[in-house]
Length: 70
Image (cartoon, rainbow, N blue to C red; front, side, top):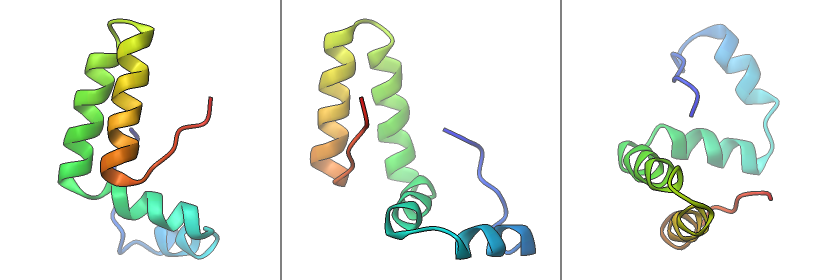
């Protein structure tokens, strides 16, 4: 996950203005400490094997309503 930028910066304001609904949702989620912890746990688990990756993504989908492209 990319590092967070200061949301008050003029650069971020311009970038936010170009986002669609999915992009805004992602920006909101990635600033949520609980989501970041779940994402980190899922990616740490998924480094073990393909089945763990699938299970971790399914967990994130159920809890946060996100989908990951294949």
